[in-house]
Length: 275
Image (cartoon, rainbow, N blue to C red):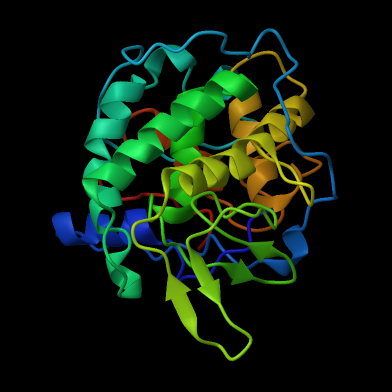
Protein backbone atom coordinates (compact mmCIF):
# COMPACT_ATOMS: atom_id res chain seq x y z
CA UNK A 1 0.00 0.00 0.00
CA UNK A 2 2.87 2.33 0.60
CA UNK A 3 4.10 4.44 -2.24
CA UNK A 4 7.03 6.26 -0.70
CA UNK A 5 9.77 8.66 -1.82
CA UNK A 6 13.02 9.56 -0.16
CA UNK A 7 11.62 13.10 0.23
CA UNK A 8 8.45 11.94 1.92
CA UNK A 9 9.13 10.71 5.32
CA UNK A 10 12.55 9.80 5.83
CA UNK A 11 11.31 12.04 8.71
CA UNK A 12 12.21 9.80 11.60
CA UNK A 13 15.62 9.17 10.09
CA UNK A 14 16.13 12.81 9.14
CA UNK A 15 15.18 14.04 12.58
CA UNK A 16 17.47 11.46 14.16
CA UNK A 17 20.30 12.81 12.06
CA UNK A 18 19.82 16.17 13.75
CA UNK A 19 20.15 14.65 17.19
CA UNK A 20 22.75 11.93 16.57
CA UNK A 21 26.18 12.58 15.03
CA UNK A 22 26.14 9.25 13.19
CA UNK A 23 24.51 9.75 9.75
CA UNK A 24 21.29 7.82 9.30
CA UNK A 25 20.62 6.25 5.88
CA UNK A 26 17.78 7.87 3.94
CA UNK A 27 14.64 5.81 3.86
CA UNK A 28 12.88 4.89 0.63
CA UNK A 29 9.54 4.13 2.18
CA UNK A 30 7.38 5.74 -0.49
CA UNK A 31 6.23 5.66 -4.10
CA UNK A 32 6.72 2.02 -5.01
CA UNK A 33 4.10 1.52 -7.76
CA UNK A 34 4.32 -2.25 -7.65
CA UNK A 35 2.91 -2.25 -4.14
CA UNK A 36 -0.75 -1.53 -4.80
CA UNK A 37 -3.36 -3.34 -2.73
CA UNK A 38 -6.63 -4.63 -4.03
CA UNK A 39 -9.76 -2.60 -3.32
CA UNK A 40 -11.46 -3.65 -0.12
CA UNK A 41 -14.18 -2.26 2.13
CA UNK A 42 -13.66 0.55 4.60
CA UNK A 43 -14.52 0.39 8.31
CA UNK A 44 -12.26 -2.53 9.14
CA UNK A 45 -12.07 -4.13 12.59
CA UNK A 46 -9.68 -6.80 13.86
CA UNK A 47 -11.56 -10.11 13.93
CA UNK A 48 -8.85 -12.32 15.43
CA UNK A 49 -9.59 -12.50 19.17
CA UNK A 50 -5.99 -13.43 19.94
CA UNK A 51 -4.66 -10.08 18.72
CA UNK A 52 -7.64 -7.80 19.39
CA UNK A 53 -7.10 -5.01 21.90
CA UNK A 54 -10.39 -4.49 23.71
CA UNK A 55 -9.30 -1.88 26.24
CA UNK A 56 -6.95 1.09 26.18
CA UNK A 57 -3.96 0.98 28.55
CA UNK A 58 -1.56 3.89 28.11
CA UNK A 59 1.04 2.57 30.55
CA UNK A 60 1.71 -0.92 29.20
CA UNK A 61 5.19 -1.70 27.93
CA UNK A 62 8.83 -0.71 28.53
CA UNK A 63 11.20 1.98 27.22
CA UNK A 64 14.67 1.46 25.68
CA UNK A 65 16.04 3.45 22.69
CA UNK A 66 18.00 1.25 20.29
CA UNK A 67 17.77 -0.24 16.80
CA UNK A 68 18.20 -3.93 16.09
CA UNK A 69 17.74 -5.45 12.66
CA UNK A 70 15.16 -8.22 12.69
CA UNK A 71 15.14 -10.95 10.06
CA UNK A 72 12.78 -13.73 9.16
CA UNK A 73 9.06 -14.29 9.60
CA UNK A 74 8.22 -11.97 12.49
CA UNK A 75 8.00 -14.70 15.11
CA UNK A 76 9.68 -14.63 18.51
CA UNK A 77 11.28 -17.95 17.50
CA UNK A 78 13.24 -15.93 14.94
CA UNK A 79 14.12 -13.26 17.49
CA UNK A 80 11.38 -10.69 16.88
CA UNK A 81 10.26 -8.81 20.00
CA UNK A 82 7.23 -10.02 21.97
CA UNK A 83 4.54 -7.57 22.97
CA UNK A 84 5.89 -7.67 26.51
CA UNK A 85 8.91 -5.70 25.26
CA UNK A 86 6.87 -2.98 23.54
CA UNK A 87 6.75 0.53 24.99
CA UNK A 88 3.69 1.78 26.74
CA UNK A 89 1.60 4.01 24.48
CA UNK A 90 2.16 6.96 26.79
CA UNK A 91 5.94 6.58 26.71
CA UNK A 92 5.98 5.94 22.99
CA UNK A 93 3.91 9.01 22.25
CA UNK A 94 5.90 11.25 24.56
CA UNK A 95 9.37 10.25 23.35
CA UNK A 96 8.31 10.70 19.72
CA UNK A 97 6.60 14.03 20.26
CA UNK A 98 9.71 15.93 19.21
CA UNK A 99 9.56 14.18 15.82
CA UNK A 100 5.97 15.32 15.37
CA UNK A 101 6.96 18.85 16.34
CA UNK A 102 9.56 19.00 13.54
CA UNK A 103 8.32 16.62 10.85
CA UNK A 104 6.66 19.31 8.70
CA UNK A 105 9.83 21.42 8.58
CA UNK A 106 11.33 19.49 5.67
CA UNK A 107 8.43 20.59 3.48
CA UNK A 108 8.57 24.23 4.55
CA UNK A 109 5.19 23.93 6.23
CA UNK A 110 4.06 25.16 9.61
CA UNK A 111 5.08 22.70 12.32
CA UNK A 112 2.48 20.68 14.20
CA UNK A 113 1.02 22.75 17.00
CA UNK A 114 0.47 21.46 20.51
CA UNK A 115 -3.26 21.30 19.73
CA UNK A 116 -2.68 19.28 16.55
CA UNK A 117 -0.42 16.85 18.40
CA UNK A 118 -3.09 16.50 21.06
CA UNK A 119 -5.60 15.75 18.28
CA UNK A 120 -3.29 13.03 16.94
CA UNK A 121 -3.21 11.47 20.40
CA UNK A 122 -6.99 11.56 20.75
CA UNK A 123 -7.54 10.30 17.21
CA UNK A 124 -5.31 7.27 17.71
CA UNK A 125 -7.10 6.42 20.93
CA UNK A 126 -10.58 6.69 19.45
CA UNK A 127 -9.73 4.85 16.24
CA UNK A 128 -7.95 2.11 18.19
CA UNK A 129 -11.08 1.60 20.26
CA UNK A 130 -13.24 1.46 17.13
CA UNK A 131 -11.00 -0.90 15.13
CA UNK A 132 -9.51 -3.01 17.96
CA UNK A 133 -6.07 -2.29 16.49
CA UNK A 134 -3.40 -1.80 19.18
CA UNK A 135 -2.90 1.96 19.57
CA UNK A 136 0.88 1.50 19.67
CA UNK A 137 0.81 -0.20 16.28
CA UNK A 138 -1.17 2.69 14.79
CA UNK A 139 1.30 5.17 16.25
CA UNK A 140 4.32 3.23 14.97
CA UNK A 141 2.97 3.10 11.41
CA UNK A 142 1.99 6.78 11.50
CA UNK A 143 5.54 7.70 12.54
CA UNK A 144 6.95 5.49 9.81
CA UNK A 145 4.72 6.99 7.13
CA UNK A 146 4.66 10.69 7.98
CA UNK A 147 6.55 11.37 11.18
CA UNK A 148 3.26 12.79 12.40
CA UNK A 149 3.24 15.80 10.05
CA UNK A 150 -0.43 16.72 9.85
CA UNK A 151 0.27 18.55 6.58
CA UNK A 152 2.16 15.64 5.01
CA UNK A 153 2.13 15.84 1.19
CA UNK A 154 0.13 13.35 -0.82
CA UNK A 155 2.22 10.98 -2.91
CA UNK A 156 1.07 9.36 -6.12
CA UNK A 157 2.85 6.40 -7.63
CA UNK A 158 -0.20 5.04 -9.41
CA UNK A 159 -2.31 5.22 -6.27
CA UNK A 160 -2.91 8.37 -4.24
CA UNK A 161 -1.47 8.13 -0.71
CA UNK A 162 -2.49 11.09 1.47
CA UNK A 163 -2.23 12.13 5.07
CA UNK A 164 -0.65 11.04 8.31
CA UNK A 165 -0.87 7.36 7.43
CA UNK A 166 -0.25 7.74 3.67
CA UNK A 167 -3.49 5.81 3.26
CA UNK A 168 -4.80 4.12 0.16
CA UNK A 169 -6.57 7.03 -1.54
CA UNK A 170 -8.29 8.12 1.67
CA UNK A 171 -10.26 11.37 1.96
CA UNK A 172 -8.35 12.70 4.96
CA UNK A 173 -5.62 15.29 4.24
CA UNK A 174 -4.55 18.81 5.13
CA UNK A 175 -2.43 19.11 1.97
CA UNK A 176 -3.90 19.71 -1.47
CA UNK A 177 -2.54 20.40 -4.93
CA UNK A 178 -4.68 22.14 -7.54
CA UNK A 179 -4.86 21.26 -11.22
CA UNK A 180 -2.34 24.05 -11.82
CA UNK A 181 0.10 22.53 -9.36
CA UNK A 182 -0.44 25.09 -6.60
CA UNK A 183 -0.12 23.56 -3.14
CA UNK A 184 -2.25 24.67 -0.22
CA UNK A 185 -2.08 23.39 3.34
CA UNK A 186 -4.63 23.77 6.09
CA UNK A 187 -3.46 25.49 9.24
CA UNK A 188 -4.60 24.56 11.72
CA UNK A 189 -5.44 21.06 10.55
CA UNK A 190 -8.89 20.35 12.05
CA UNK A 191 -9.22 17.62 14.67
CA UNK A 192 -11.90 15.98 12.53
CA UNK A 193 -9.50 15.74 9.58
CA UNK A 194 -6.74 14.35 11.78
CA UNK A 195 -9.14 11.68 13.00
CA UNK A 196 -10.13 10.92 9.41
CA UNK A 197 -6.47 10.46 8.42
CA UNK A 198 -5.86 8.05 11.29
CA UNK A 199 -9.06 6.18 10.49
CA UNK A 200 -8.14 5.95 6.80
CA UNK A 201 -4.90 4.22 7.77
CA UNK A 202 -6.24 1.98 10.51
CA UNK A 203 -9.76 1.09 9.35
CA UNK A 204 -9.15 1.25 5.60
CA UNK A 205 -10.72 3.27 2.81
CA UNK A 206 -13.12 2.47 -0.04
CA UNK A 207 -10.01 2.08 -2.21
CA UNK A 208 -7.82 -0.13 -0.08
CA UNK A 209 -6.81 -1.72 3.18
CA UNK A 210 -5.90 -0.30 6.53
CA UNK A 211 -4.12 -1.89 9.47
CA UNK A 212 -7.21 -3.76 10.63
CA UNK A 213 -7.48 -5.52 7.30
CA UNK A 214 -3.76 -6.28 7.09
CA UNK A 215 -3.84 -7.72 10.62
CA UNK A 216 -6.69 -9.97 9.55
CA UNK A 217 -4.71 -11.02 6.48
CA UNK A 218 -1.66 -11.85 8.62
CA UNK A 219 -3.39 -15.07 9.74
CA UNK A 220 -1.27 -15.68 12.80
CA UNK A 221 -2.30 -15.58 16.44
CA UNK A 222 0.91 -14.26 17.97
CA UNK A 223 2.93 -11.04 17.80
CA UNK A 224 4.12 -11.92 14.30
CA UNK A 225 0.68 -10.79 13.09
CA UNK A 226 1.70 -7.17 13.69
CA UNK A 227 5.01 -7.44 11.86
CA UNK A 228 3.40 -9.31 8.98
CA UNK A 229 0.59 -6.75 8.87
CA UNK A 230 3.13 -3.92 8.73
CA UNK A 231 4.81 -5.55 5.74
CA UNK A 232 1.46 -6.00 4.00
CA UNK A 233 0.58 -2.36 4.67
CA UNK A 234 3.87 -1.33 3.12
CA UNK A 235 3.99 -3.62 0.11
CA UNK A 236 0.61 -5.29 -0.33
CA UNK A 237 1.81 -8.76 0.57
CA UNK A 238 4.31 -10.91 2.44
CA UNK A 239 6.91 -12.64 0.30
CA UNK A 240 6.09 -16.28 -0.42
CA UNK A 241 9.10 -17.29 1.67
CA UNK A 242 7.53 -15.66 4.73
CA UNK A 243 10.65 -13.55 5.21
CA UNK A 244 9.53 -10.00 6.02
CA UNK A 245 12.78 -8.58 4.64
CA UNK A 246 12.09 -9.93 1.17
CA UNK A 247 9.63 -8.99 -1.57
CA UNK A 248 8.55 -5.56 -2.76
CA UNK A 249 8.96 -2.04 -1.37
CA UNK A 250 10.90 -1.23 1.79
CA UNK A 251 12.64 -4.33 3.07
CA UNK A 252 13.44 -2.73 6.43
CA UNK A 253 9.81 -1.70 6.98
CA UNK A 254 8.71 -4.48 9.36
CA UNK A 255 12.02 -4.28 11.22
CA UNK A 256 11.55 -0.51 11.55
CA UNK A 257 8.07 -0.99 13.00
CA UNK A 258 9.32 -3.58 15.48
CA UNK A 259 12.00 -1.14 16.60
CA UNK A 260 9.57 1.76 16.94
CA UNK A 261 7.36 -0.42 19.11
CA UNK A 262 10.28 -1.31 21.36
CA UNK A 263 11.68 2.17 21.86
CA UNK A 264 13.62 3.28 18.78
CA UNK A 265 13.63 7.07 18.58
CA UNK A 266 17.11 8.56 18.18
CA UNK A 267 19.45 5.58 18.06
CA UNK A 268 21.23 5.15 14.70
CA UNK A 269 19.34 2.93 12.31
CA UNK A 270 21.21 -0.28 11.60
CA UNK A 271 19.26 -2.11 8.90
CA UNK A 272 21.04 -3.35 5.80
CA UNK A 273 18.08 -4.97 4.07
CA UNK A 274 17.57 -2.06 1.69
CA UNK A 275 21.25 -1.84 0.81
